[in-house]
Length: 417
Image 1 (cartoon, rainbow, N blue to C red):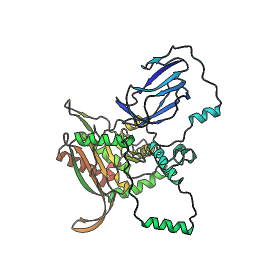
Image 2: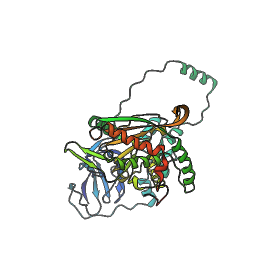
Image 3: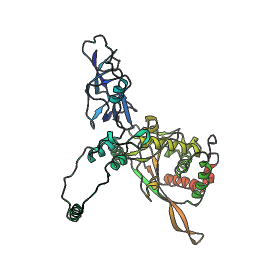
Image 4: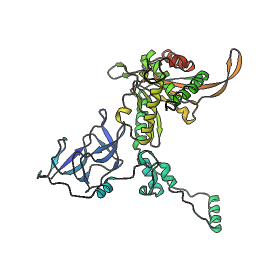
């Protein structure tokens, strides 16, 4: 047997560091080749790092919450079998390998199985004193959600009259002053903070706000929703937003571009990969609908549904999170009316859609009540000026206000033009 250090691998696109989210194996435990040892979070995704060979875990290179550079020691194994060539340092004599200690299937299952829960859910359980092993998960694959943890604390209790009076008096008295809680900025919130700070610091934003008459859009949506329901598709407005944005990007390529300011280069993207900002229990993620301009409305709807399920289960892959050229933020789904979205570098623009609501508008000199969809587009002012932005916004508006122009050849699978 020989000990060797397994370095933190680059699991993304030239990443420099990763955060330790959870250790799945204790020091001293046996692990088997390809068994997940530790969960790490990068700028792109949450990733399980498996053991490169069978052996016993001798040491961990970092604690949960610690951020380590790519290439530094992640964990040390006392290998059973040939030591893999990983670029790490081998310790010991390299004596002949011995087989792993025999154990029953039940023992193996017990040592590997752990309650499935996100770091935020585990922290909530710790705060509430809930043992995750005692909680039945209702999420995908039996994953324990924050709601499951909170529900586990709501056991019925009986309060006697005297105790009830004491509780009532306590409720009326001033609450005691507690201490501020300070915790490190970690996980998805850390990634959001870093990317938003970088965007605001380096990209000069210019934003236009527009209100769109959504009468025809909502009429088309109702018709398409009924049509696609027969094909097992639950259609929201979001696929229509994607289709309109993709069509506008093709007409205005400077919004489907990126700027390398240091080297003074502009790259006009050949592919139209639209990121969809999604809110999860752990924070914001932006999975990508690749080649959105080549997909039908049905295909876009199915792709978004797949990405949503994966985002909620925290199973998004690096491919699903990479390669975006433009982003949509549908904050109207949260009840927000209007906002100013922040660009995600190296992209050149982002569009945000608010919640459509009825408003009194002038139509041919008469006041009418129409559904109005608010839209905001932020662009990199180094690439696009005000008249460029106005033209781009007007193109999106034209497609959404007249969706018949948008839907030609883009309705069902195999029909994209």
